[in-house]
Length: 554
Image 1 (cartoon, rainbow, N blue to C red):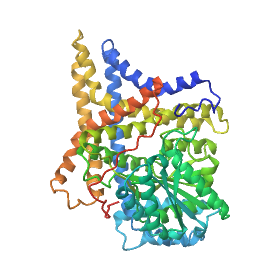
Image 2 (image 1 turned 180 degrees about the vertical axis):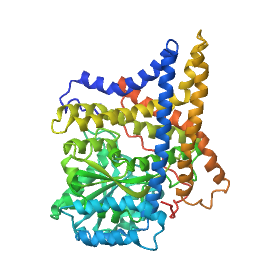
Image 3 (image 1 turned 90 degrees about the vertical axis):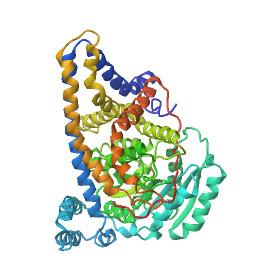
Image 4 (image 1 turned 30 degrees about the horizontal axis):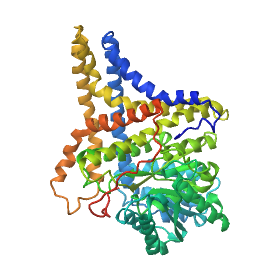
């Protein structure tokens, strides 16, 4: 049974099942209650819907503002020389002087200064509070590139991006973490890539995860855990302190920015309790964005910007896809949970309870470029897109774990635990309900009025909610403008006409939110309600017309 902690946590199975059903019960209960009350309590429904619409109106403007700020910050940080910063990590006074000098430099525009100032203030605070900065010369990196059965043209650009990093690669271990069940072809491809590019790194090898290990489901967690344990063995043999090793997990289509390794090293070295933290770069689904259908382009862009918006509120940030951790933290948390398909999100909770609530996720405002969903044909592409979002939405399965561990862990104040519980439940509730309620909620009383009611509220509510939603469209300007500036330049094989569709595609936003947003979330929560578990990681089809462009605007 996938993701069932009831035995290891000593919880009666029936109690665990009740907690698993909680997210779906809340979501479906809210939707059904609104429909039912539309026939008997129109005024109450109208108040709820109007309040909900106004709440999301403010949320959308807040999201748009954070997106623009985040985009500006990423653009401003892109030109910094993090290797230069590494040279004075151990000398806090020199680092503070350098930061002040950079901020006052005449060749930095006033707009860039405004964008950089909050970030420099954060780094200043880290440097001034860091009682034990780590010598960057001691840091070793382990890059785990997870693959299942992907082709060379998907994996090779990711390796090339690592080779192009502005960092000393002799301090980097490259591990191609592949699946035995992927067959001999992926084994051949991985060995060829290690033979061709391995000499650029301090160490490079293929870690072939055995198939059908007892206690594991078919998922990424088992693969990267197997590879990380090999890293642990190697560092132990060499006498390397696990607190000096940073482990980054990448899917095989993920391309790091050239500054990623130096940036990560800098932040890791100046952080207190660095092994208790996760380090989250920004996922940008732009590798093949020009080739993807309009609907999946909208979804990919929204997914890219959602993480950036959350990163502007670091207290809400969670592990997602590519992320980094100290090897010591991984060992303390017993690596990743090998019986879930959402190993990234669940890793946050493993670390959180391992360190009694002291775990935080540190944003790295640098891009890791990923593939938008693209398969052979529109129908297969949309089916694969739905599966990907359903897998992400299956993070609602963390709810029982969070509730049980919160109840039992007396070392964490309830004031902190209640906030975390609320965010866990509210996030998946809004994912499932918000698009549906905002799209059709205003029409429910009017439809109900056809069955006998002539309440004037029923006739005016669609007009009022429509007016609120029209105003909220202004909030889309942030994503639209930012997307056009952030995506890579149009490749030669794509017609200039695609520029027009890149703007017109945003009219598909309601469809993407309802079908692929609410639909995927409700599907995942309904499966949890009835015990129809997702017990296998659905590997998203990856397809490109040509290699991803090297130029990127983030």
